[in-house]
Image (cartoon, rainbow, N blue to C red; front, side, top):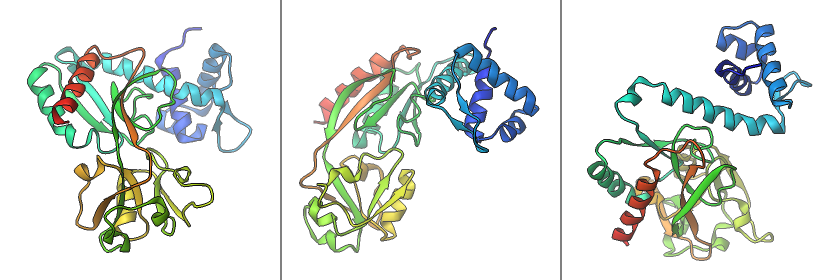
Length: 286
């Protein structure tokens, strides 16, 4: 049978809603009709995408893999059919936090001067790939290891790590902080897009406690409120200055790579220009 966009929308609705009942309500379909659509998609792919053995539906391993592909395919079609795209084709650049640090504004300004016919849209997406794997953006500025399949990357620079703390923290009296200094304090960890885990510390000297958050705003609030300290990179102060926060260099931790990432297929034709300009801006600011 022919698979249509409605099959992708049905699967993505089920994956997001967690139940056929809620997904059917969102799509204004009956439950039997939605279940039938899902079975048709699974039959075409020759794989079960959803585990129906529990009351709350769970995606299978194949379902998790297919979710990103379905989202990217649907986003590509919607972009192609957007009437506004006939006048211009914006280049959507995703990031999870801090973008390119203090190089961000020079990059945007030089792009506007050199590519006036191609709007460069900077979008923050709280996701491990900044929305790239789901087709929400065309390219992304990412930190740390990029393990998602189907993505190409090129290293732009490496950033030093910094410690973020409340202004009244006793650590603020130090000019440079070590991992050992931090071990006695709760550490705020952004589990969605952060670059820090407890693996940064030696196994025998890890922090006494952690606080898990899911985005940069929650991370900053937890630190400003005095509930934890955090580890980030040198790009963060340029985008997230606050009177309640103090930044100090972290003396004994490895640097963090910053890459430009894009999909191997369905790429925007201006990505090579963006990559070249990013390197030019970084070289000029060095």
